[in-house]
Image (cartoon, rainbow, N blue to C red; front, top):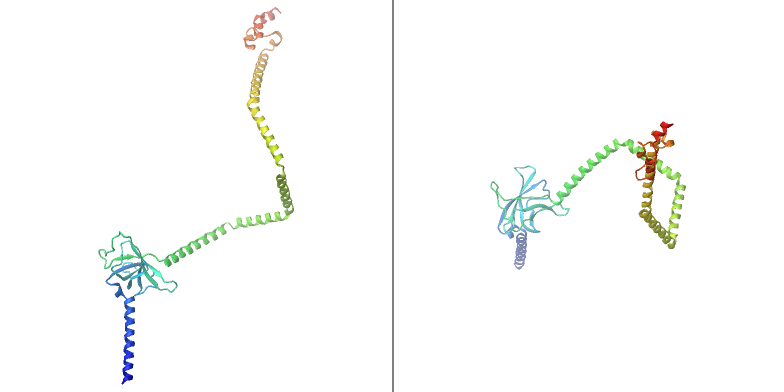
Length: 305
């Protein structure tokens, strides 16, 4: 009898411990710890792989609810409606958004609530809605996959354009490659001359470095003196040459006028200018003009002869 009593006591104690552990786990992870809950509809665009009924809903990393149902949207088959029971104390605002949060590489996903400003009003069900709706954003994995898809499409387009470009310019590319080969062969054939040129250049550079500082200073002083003389010539000498050029042009003009006069009347070179032409040949202020005016008329001499 004592043995049976001991077994019964041990069994009852073990069962009590199991029930207590189960109750503690249920209390710690179950919805009872969340108190009163409110159902929200979370609208996802695209796939929700890894999400299932019972998946936790997190707000700033804390569990505030769980997924109760998943279904395809009746209004748009490309979207998925997820019903979630969330603690009524959770500050779900009109600007709160949701997204899938993948647990590493396990494939299991949680619903993560993000955003929501302090002064924004609380999210309420609109007219015609059974539950308040939270619009979901694309997850980081979805963004990564979408960007990879776009990048792959652009890479394909680039390869197509590159192939077309190569096909259209095959002749030009062949000629360019041939010219490059000829140029390379020319360089190889004249490598000795190129080496000689480089050697001469190096020697010239070395000679410039070896110039004495005194010689460089003397060259600089000579250049400064030459520039000073040039400035002096431009300020004084040019004016003198300018006056000389004016006098030369005046003399040439006078000589040209005299030659034209002789060409019109060659006899005046022998007999002197006539009275009508005398004022045109010499200016009034010259002494030669005064002598011509006082001289007897040329026409009378020609008549006497």
